[in-house]
Length: 270
Length: 334
Ligand SMILES: Nc1ncnc2c1ncn2[C@@H]1O[C@H](COP(=O)(O)OP(=O)(O)OP(=O)(O)O)[C@@H](O)[C@H]1O
Ligand SMILES: [Mg+2]
Image (cartoon, rainbow over the protein chains, first blue to last red):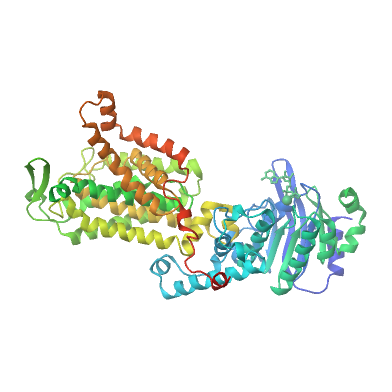
């Protein structure tokens, strides 16, 4: 099945919800390597959209392009109808797209609480003078912000470690802290890059439940990269499959699982 | 006591100025930007003071005479009319504004550079400024500007300006580290890419931090020019930047107290050692080193410091959860 056909098929099956994110012929070259090759797909409001594919398929690169961390070689990304591929990462974040990183990128020397509070940046307004002088607006914000951050820490089960330096947290806690930090942006679209990496099957199952809970509670649209196939099949409304930078399948979990191209490229290897 | 202050007045003032210069380098570093531009803005501030006080304002500095009173100590004093402190403050404002403008113009392109390249660009700025001031008539050419008038009768008098200024800038940075902007700076220092992905505008905050440092250095330059009485292109050179950096790195680069303590202690150190050099019976070479080896000593301290105190003498573990002021109720309840 070609990418084109996959996209059409998905469009027919999908319920009539509004499109949040529209990737059009996304392409990224690294020298001679086509890391992402003309990938097109739509993500609909409120869905959990899975992105799978073998190592080096271009999944993370795709995330980096959506969040503005890597420039597009060609193509376009639309978010709620407007083009965002020329925007800076902070502008994209400000519009409500948050992410976690596959290779955890916390602010390691800062406490868990500080990590979350930093991501509240766009929702606070106090500037240098107001902040330094402790004017009323700034004072109120600086009182309120840690409270909110603690709610998020509580949500991911890290309240007890609020003052611990991020780099000293156990691996699983670091992954959950990344999620709390991303949530502090109050995103509408959340991009999770292998959030279950390094977890055992039990933890993976818990995480899956947790992500569904977040999705329901914050009315999030979730884009999820994950290698663990059962988790993806169980959690996602739709799944896109990348292989060598190309979209080889897109559709509901059942469809994708039976797709010969997918079995060939990926699932067969399990 | 009076003799002590009269003798060490200029040293005390210079120590406090050094602390502020260290702070001026610490500010961009707070946002992860290693810049050695401070001496450039310091030089700029000095010229602003020199030009305004000798060429713009009709003040006859020739009427101020230098008096040496010889006793057990040499005591320098000025007699004659004093330069108005209000004008000194005006000069500080002008220097601050000019430094800010120059910092923004310079910072916007330069702060796109990272690490060593930014460092080189800021060094180049200092060098270029030095060459320019050597040839301009406005800045007195190679000779510089003399007879910069004294606003205080003694060196210690400068403390009236320097102490409040140090408290003000220390308070400013202390507060800065605990608010939204400061957290954004720290995030950029920790991980630029992650900071950007969390909605922090990198260029804005880098230029902001750079500009704050520049303003402080410019203001310090104004005071120094008066206190030294003459200003030329040998003030605020590249090696001064290395010295400030030593203040910060040895004092501690993770909390505002580091550069302040570093600046005060390390500036005084050579003077103390110079005193030691006078001890009779010391081998000549050692005495010479103690007397003139200021840069060698800073270099040595930098090396030893980075080995034994990689975070500097003053470490932020002493000030836990430093960027958050309020303790959340949820945590109190636990
Ligand atoms: N900055 C870069 N420079 C050069 N090549 C890169 C860069 N980033 C990624 N690549 C290459 O692009 C391809 C896609 O990488 P990417 O990280 O997107 O894969 P992935 O699907 O996320 O893989 P994994 O499952 O291992 O995380 C790989 O071949 C990788 O080596
Ligand atoms: Mg990846």
